[in-house]
Length: 288
Image 1 (cartoon, one colour):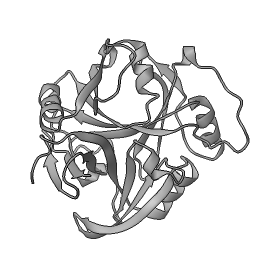
Image 2 (cartoon, rainbow, N blue to C red):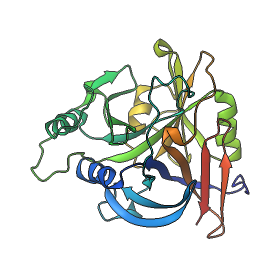
Image 3 (tube, rainbow, N blue to C red):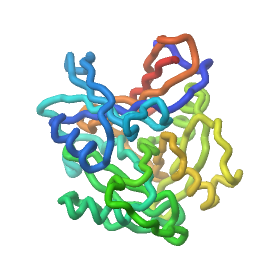
């Protein structure tokens, strides 16, 4: 299909994952993470017609937010490949990141309700975070707006949502060749590199891509102030994780649960297209 290279990207608008049990997934994302159901549609998937439910941190105000919707495509019988299954390549899709005001409070409340959550901790000078999984095994990172050293707890009302001020902030994909991937997302899709971070102790780097129409607090992409600014924005970024050591091709097939990224672009209303990035991830775009 045609490429949106001549069209300005307005936002990262959608992120589609597979679910084997739509009811369980909806109960998790609405009951525990506080997302709202926007709509449910029938559309053509890889195996034929499938039900796709769209959710967002919109609280009934879908038109007032800039972060992406989460789309859950129902495929009964699907299951994520086991992490130790040597018959499949390592998964390329990693996680979604949800930013919020108070990660420790959220983790404590989730545990009280029976959800397994890793212990929140400051990860180097990147962020204060923890991880959990949805009923299908998809990884979710909770990332605090402020570093642990800068955090100041606020009084919590009994009616306050479990996740305070949440945003679907980033979608993380693992890539083999970061220069090739950046060329695709920047030159072909017209996104902008807004931050990069070397994590030498773990052998990887992180690159964050967005629309480029915001003004960060510093031009130093490695500044901690720049990263805290990233975690407070109400928009979704694409995060590319690149391991420095040579890796085999990543699996991007249905066994990973990842279906597609969706971009909204500026152009003639209703036009749309689909591309594949250098690692095989599917990227869809629609104009408005």
